[in-house]
Length: 303
Image (cartoon, rainbow, N blue to C red; front, side, top):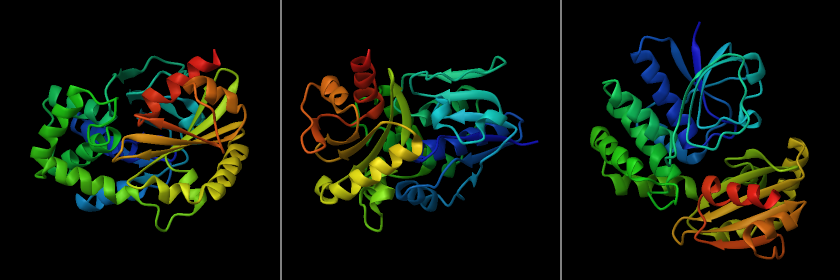
């Protein structure tokens, strides 16, 4: 029976590439592991998979045994998680309420990307990383740290990326910019798809919320369809049974975020960032990380 290695719903590049890398590691350690995904891949991830000629992982809605990567909150897991036995957790986020009936292997570290942890596990256990897997792990790090601009980025992420780039045979910054550009535009995307990008569900005190994020070179391209985005965010909130929907429109070049707000309580957002929400939006200079600059602030504001 195969062990599925899977990331969160609305998967980003780290969620997909870390699943592939972790499945490779498990196979090297003698286990029958298969990479999987819990949702559709985005344009950036497709670019990485195509560049390194790796197939898109299998989409799953049910599994007997799983290893979770890049998430640990039940609300972010694939829909059939309640029927699966969780064997291990590899992550770089806050602990978010996951409970298991048995002890499991946990490797959670305060780094910028799950792929950094996966690469380190390979090196610690002398598992040789082939070029295509190195390229995918590199892609995940460059994506999650926004080419090292994110405040979540650590020296471990940078060193891992440099080593992985050498193995993959790519020039780090050149490939990184190409990767980010591939996922930065919204051409061909509907407002619903934009609002659903990298969506995660959270609880801030008694407030249930969803927080999405799209990273772009030109935020005005996204803000031009704000009215439609707000309607899509409201629809998402209703479907997810939450009261508040946030969408981070993150400007890669200028290192800032326009935070769109739909639903209630909007004053929780104002309290978290000490700024007034005007026309369903608040501008946050210097903010690029949901994990470090949005979720903790919202959590503290809700206390």
